[in-house]
Image (cartoon, rainbow, N blue to C red):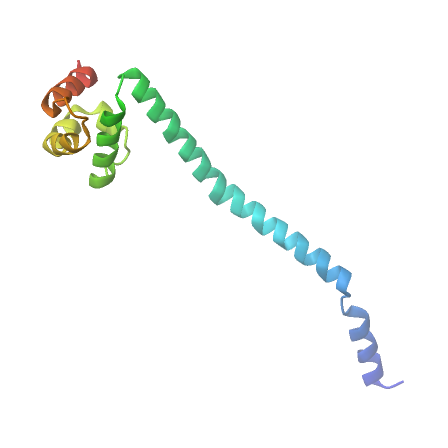
Length: 128
């Protein structure tokens, strides 16, 4: 027996068979997917759930009409107000974007509803 036969025998013994590779890659895939879920998908879902609960609370608390919610949502996305609920709790933020909100309200208000009256009513409900 030569040293080549010895090392070839060791290499043959150390090579993995197909079942070992399937088990190994299955475990690696499950670990990677669980890390992806824990660190990326779950926090995004919780953030979306929180935003949904916050929007429902605000719309119920201030009795917002659909067109008012739509106008405020458009303004928040357009001006990148972060966090979005800051628009509802900070009077200075509201007053900063009041003219832009009026123009958005003019587009979203149904016929027969005055945008200026809606803005005044909205300001009164939010900050009185």
